[in-house]
Image (spheres, rainbow, N blue to C red):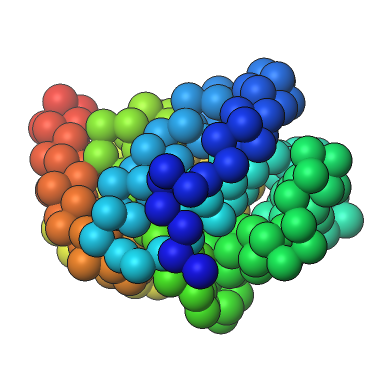
Length: 224
């Protein structure tokens, strides 16, 4: 079902947004409401060129990080978020099929799922996947990288001791014990462009990637 915006249950979506706005107030600065709101806006933009169920995309976008990494200790945060999303959507009144689709989209779209070998199956999951990664790139990606590093106790900003245009491939993927926000670019952010799955996502990623490269070059220049 390709549910367009005018067929969405906007009263239900409003309840989702209101719940999320309150729930993420105490999340780390990189994952508060402005993050999920930006992901939802990017996902909506990408959806204009994809035949997707927009309601599934938007609900998944708002709920994709409803449980933080710090809160989820016994399971991956995206699984915990998908499970909590089920409970929230049942209370609001969404039907079982819709809820199961949102669960699958949240799980499949996650960056952590990607590095563990899971790939998005549905078009909705591909849209959310690209939107979430795009929010980690560009100017906002840079700001969020430093906010994220501070939240997890990084001791230094770091040095650009790699080529931003061709970062080393032997650096491990992101972990919560990342040495510095600058190393976060080499281990994750500069790799995101190659992970895009939609045509719009690839186009948007190009500009954001180039901005990050430019930033790192200037950062390195100022450290001389």
